[in-house]
Image 1 (tube, chains in turn orange, cyan):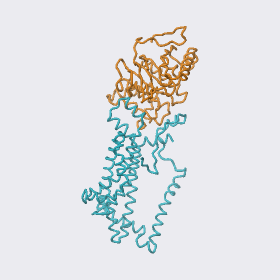
Image 2 (image 1 turned 45 degrees about the vertical axis):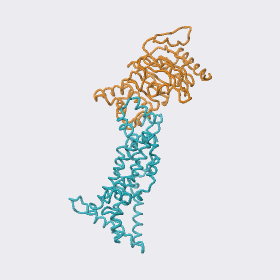
Image 3 (image 1 turned 30 degrees about the vertical axis):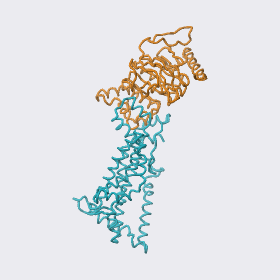
Image 4 (image 1 turned 135 degrees about the vertical axis):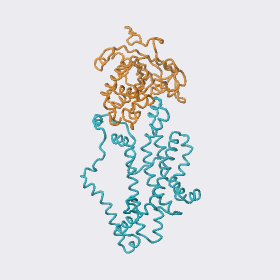
Length: 274
Length: 304
């Protein structure tokens, strides 16, 4: 993404479409369940090799949107394109980290088996190499033979991240990945994610309701309104990388963007839906 | 619709609490196998466990000495001697087993295991199919409840009529009677695999065969095992019942024959065999379950 820092505009809006490689494109995506409209005409671009964050109030249809992006659900209107190809079913090169690690990991498999399971079809040698690399990336070397339930929540979520990495994803989806871990673990995992993303250059799309987290992680924030959700604003975050929890979070720019996102979410909560 | 043993409730794993305590436990590779009960030293524990069996033996002996009850209750020692005489032998080439073991015990156990085996295969296969498909469950639910609530010994005659008088009516009666706990528990286990796990399997494009063998079956295994455990004791009961009529051998046949010929020592000897059999079956089953479900024991202990 091009740097679009404009002095008059406190928070830069995203550059117009066609400005570079959009890995994932949402074009007027709506989904209704019966008469109940969950998301309404969502249009956004997720740039390649960047971290994008969808933030919105709880119940704003973030999970619905994620299900549609991952091909588990179909939109009632609009289209989703991944690498220029319309999404039909779960696309190749997509991996996901779920909020509830204790339910998404398999308690009857040890750590290495959990990580290797999605790439079972690969030759043994390549599989072993990928598993070793992924486990090393998330800092769990030496814990391969533990069962997930023998680990803390933070470590289990690392296993889930390693499992996603082992499949060499181009797009990593994360559904409220750190909502079930304590604050310190959360901070560590946020830094882990940013390190892995910059090392591997994968495209990451995180869904969260945490405004701090969204600003801290994101190159681009897609702010959703209260249901039926529309895109309130797309913000390109121009905070320098690498970021860290003390310097970045005390940066006046961080405070400014956080305040802006907070106001957006507040005002939309009070707005009456059309 | 879950069938659970009173002694061994199946815990649904809850999400692990996020705390330092859990982190600590990560250092321990496996949870301790068995904890000393209530902290007693082991000789006390052993003694405590012997109290009730000793009381039963005492009661048995007392009954055998009674003026009336003594007519049909043989004392433990006589019964045990009779058991040794008929079911054991000094012949190493026959594994120190007696005639009655080969003529009656083995055929009985063979039929019980065959029936149980059929029930496990049928129960798990149909249970998985029904558990995966809500439509099939809805279709067959009434039939399953009908079959389950039928007192199956009442069908013995029907099975004789359908399958003749050999082993097959007995095996099929056992299978028909004990399939229900396995079937219902498998349905329940499979349908409670959880949305997140199903979604994870979908997102990672796991092929259907692997979903079945690596996700559905292991996930349902704790409930399936609970069902098999119930069925195991049923199969022993049905084994005896099926041999009470139109039988030429088996423990049930021995029971009824010894009663008819007023051979009460023989009768009590068979009861001793049945007790040993029940304990043996249960221990073997527990050993298998402990191996197969090691992860589940650990996971539930961790979350308690």
